[in-house]
Amino acid sequence: MKIEAGVLERADGSAYLEIGGNKVLAAVYGPRELHVRRIMRPDMAVIRCRYNMAPFSVGDRKRPGPDRRSVEISKITADALRPAVFLEKFPRSTIDIFIEILEAEGGTRCAGITAASVALADAGIPMRDLVVSCAAGKANGNVVLDLSENEDKEGEADLPVAIMPRSGEITLLQMDGHLTSEEFDKALNLAVEGCKKINEAQKEAIKNRYGEENG
Amino acid sequence: MVNIVPEITRKSITELIKKGERADGRSPNDYRDISLEVGVIEKAEGSARVKMGNTQIMIGIKPQIGEPFADTPNVGVLMTNSELLPMASPTFEPGPPDERSVELARVVDRCLREGEVIDLEKLCIIEGEKVWMIFLDLHVLDYDGNLMDAAVLGSVAALLNTKIPVAKVEEDNVVIDEENSVELPIKEKPLMCTFAKIGGELVIDPSLDEENIMDARISIGMREDGSLCAMQKGGEMPLTNEEIKEAINITSQKTKELREHLK
Image 1 (cartoon, each protein chain N blue to C red):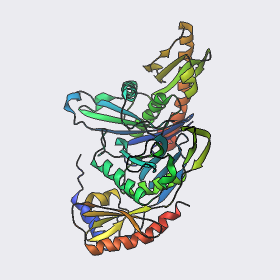
Image 2 (tube, helix red, strand yellow):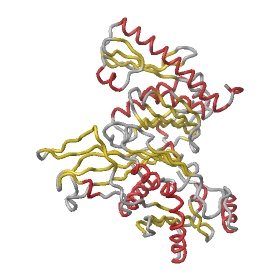
Image 3 (cartoon, rainbow over the protein chains, first blue to last red):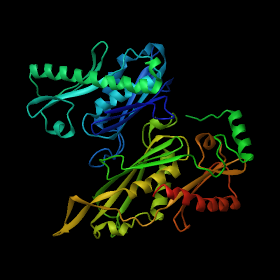
């Protein structure tokens, strides 16, 4: 696993993340003026997110442009990050998050959220905590952490989770598959433990960029 | 979003160029630092990440088997597509490709195709029925000027790095042998140089600030033997015959330097 903050010149904040076979780039613009009046909030900023997969990131070329899957992931990513940001500090503006999956190997939505949260911090946006995401699941009858592409396709369940580690509050929870109540408890605990490990790497990336005194 | 350049920036850049200097300390015919990595995406059959100054583009190659065009039944297909990602600049917006993105893809496509980078006839599997289609995707990650030269350089590097599976014909069916792969039949290595005209002078590899204030732009694609394979003029002002000839002369020297990065 590798996380690096501040990798792009133009973006206000950016982060690059490699986890397993995933390579993810996230960039943040804002807070900036919002041109779409319809979604403007007079008392706070809005967060918009675009999750996109590169055509060359998967085995068979993916046609460029949004599909149903990427639209859903964009939405849940924005939802997962929103609770961490002090939105009320920036009324009538927008914070735009762009996530590019350059190479995909299972668990890209979690990688995207983890990277985007580092990019938000790199952009200097005030936050309650970093958001970190990790999936647990069930494959071959066992509850396991961070399913690979094959485990995800053939496994029995997938449970992506995002948390704010300081409070332990959960900002993303999805489930796809079949689990007993006990298995769910086990999987959720496992995912939270995984998140905490990744969170250390996030903090490290920000410290590397800005030095110990600001960490 | 309209790019507004302060008058003072415009003036200082123009004054410097008139004196033969540039805002970032380069001389008129210097490129910014170039870095080129290949094989960066394992899932892509070929890939490259190119940086020209702060401009950064990721290029991925994906082959697919498809049908040839009716007028060229024995020729494979090279498709160039570009995406100006909204992360690359505050002026790029999500959505269908705008005219800048289409121009970039088409100019790069012309330079590669007319520069005969691949011997496309060797990509024919069954004449009139099955050929290899090579998809080249330009993923612009960071925009700090001169996308075209970076895109062509990175594309050629990615194509040189590409390995496609072996396709065999068995009883009129195409069988793909994923175990064995071959390099693409590379024929030529065309490259492109772009110049901006500012204050009546030409400067190579314009930075974003220079692009924002330039009067005109000329991009020249050239093969290794010095023959031309693509040109594109841009910008609002005209160019003279002499300026275009000067640009061609400089291109023939500078493409030699750029070609060193492909070794």
